[in-house]
Length: 315
Image (cartoon, rainbow, N blue to C red):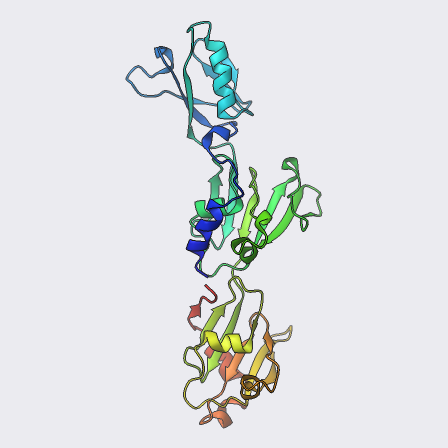
């Protein structure tokens, strides 16, 4: 899946949400500039805008009007309040407020994004808009995104949302593919201040042996994969495969792996059902020329996965 193309489509179609700076809610530690036509007191004296920092209680000290509550208001409302207060000094005040530093609405975006870390909301933003702010999803990103929200901002508005054991947070997971395919557009929800968004690494399956491209393959936006799909990711058989004696090597809860026989020849002919694979499974396709040696143990196939190139799948 081409995330960059689909991500643009999702961001642009975020349910018609208003996201401009005018609807941004001002808060403590934000820095603003204020321009008032014909009132030089709000300038820096050299034509530059003078910055004003909103204090921890949400107030800002301004010329002429003194201490004014800015926190909790959006920019349009704050401009309107300043117009009212400045009518004592100017008949028809023309006021423009701009945010020069956003600091009051941090969110954390972690995991498989290009630029993980703390980012600042700048107006109303949807989930995939803030993912875009973090540089977008990496190729190895998984098919789910986890969102954790403080209780004071309300429960996450999804049927799957749950309250954590402390009762202080709302937790939900959304499906990347469901949002991008417009199957569940409601999951591209509005992000709130202090949300923690985690994008886990995609699960892997491995294909080794007599195939054209041995390696580990990310499930990406897939929840599962079958042996035929895994074989397709590996670009099919290589020279002289022993396709009737393939096997899946699967972790069994210990350091060992169990061997599950797979007759790829019968599956390809429609004489046997396709076999689902699990995360971290290894599909081993022995070579007919060396099957007597390699098929004796799973150790050779497991060792082959060490240092293999990891490929993206389903992009």
